[in-house]
Image (cartoon, rainbow, N blue to C red; front, side, top):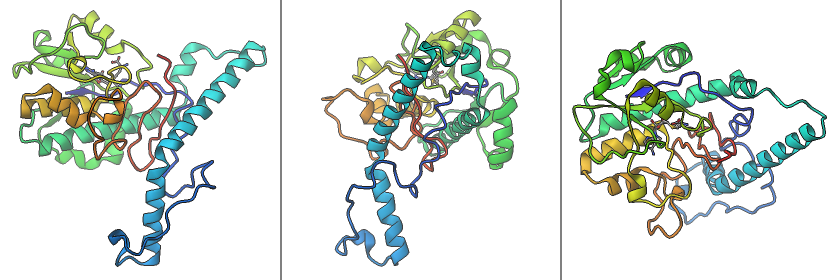
Length: 312
Ligand SMILES: C[S@@+](CC[C@H](N)C(=O)[O-])C[C@H]1O[C@@H](n2cnc3c(N)ncnc32)[C@H](O)[C@@H]1O
């Protein structure tokens, strides 16, 4: 279903938060006081000193997550402003546009890894779904994403219900049966038609490349449609979601036949406009998250951190 990352781009901002993890002391927060071991807290009971410390560290990491993200956004904004100022003053030459997009192999690696993890999440969600899709087809499977799976996720060869296809989707399926899902489409899917193949663009770009998928599909003469999010949920920013969230929404819709329920169960509630009247999901802030307001949540262990400001 997902088309893997077609050499996704990266900016030099991607890397910055990637190394943050529970064990690292968040910058600028050293002076805060954090809860100490509470002997009445059952979570600490039966734990050795080291395990208690680890638990405290993890809690502190969780508590400071939002603050760290905010600080990181500020830092990136400052960096950008400084950079622009230097360009304006003629101290440095503006980077050629293309280079800015294609550059840093480390960041590209991070995005490829993120894509791989999102595909893994799709597979896992499908496996446990009471109403799974018949087949997930990973089209255009080659290059770095294949290399990533071949080296880091070798067990995928044992996955059932997934086909890995080196050919692009347009060579694998009839055009008429394809529907390219994209937030930029003017159409909305109202129902899931079991006779159709729904394409999710295998891209991790924080929506840097606006309308990329929409334009590609339109050029290919493939029908496009967005999820009907706006009809049910007020979002704080645009409605561009990660590959795994889109996939999970489709699964939930097939299970409940209820879009609102599907959106509420999958989309992190912090992305909703305030006063939406729903509480936070347990997993909020843990999933891979494609966001234009500067937040991409990494794959938990810090192998992809919060990243960049996205200019809308
Ligand atoms: C991170 S988005 C890619 C954003 C990219 N800039 C683009 O051109 O679409 C990854 C994929 O998720 C799907 N997607 C994300 N949000 C969606 C929405 N609101 N409706 C339908 N599909 C969506 C699309 O297939 C998209 O290609």
